[in-house]
Length: 266
Image (cartoon, rainbow, N blue to C red):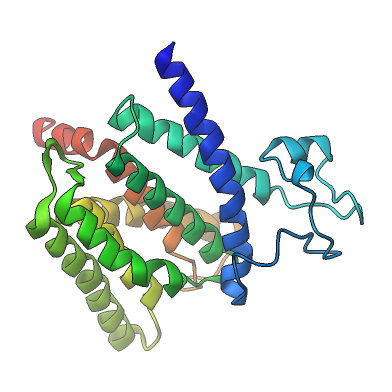
């Protein structure tokens, strides 16, 4: 019963934070303040009443439309709130039945990846306002209090965290430089480089490798599928941030299990 209450709290907390993430997703790429003004309808610019801003439920009660102008509200808003809420519940389930400092950091980590994903899908950018402060924070927390997601009984530690930062940023920087030289165009965005440095600080060097593998695998599958189904041209730009998010979250939640399966499946 106690665990169920904690999961409900995590879901509610995650949905509320998810509502704020929607503000970040909309305003960050437009260089707008995420603090002021208060939430407004993007169509008519009317302030949204607090009772119309209840995560997930308000979208249902308003039938997916603005109370004032009746313009349709994107399904993206309740989707972000729901995904963030579910991720918080899964993180709580995976890493303990009580709240702790590293659990809150994991909450912030998955939320930042969610913001990166939706901004990259819509605008094909990864904001520096997330990754640049995220890199030193990931290094500080990874060096001091974060567990190793592949050896959960141990702390990640400074060595694994700094190697993760350098490998995450360095590996993708090399790919960007090599891709530019070979294909005469950008093969990797600077945002991806900084994102993976941040991921490396939290997950360590093993997390960087697994994130890169899983993200590349999913990206290849979806990229080939889009070429076959929709006739998308080979070489057309596809944002890589969402696939790296997929890889990073799987590495965080199931890195230990994936590594164990790989080592003993041979």
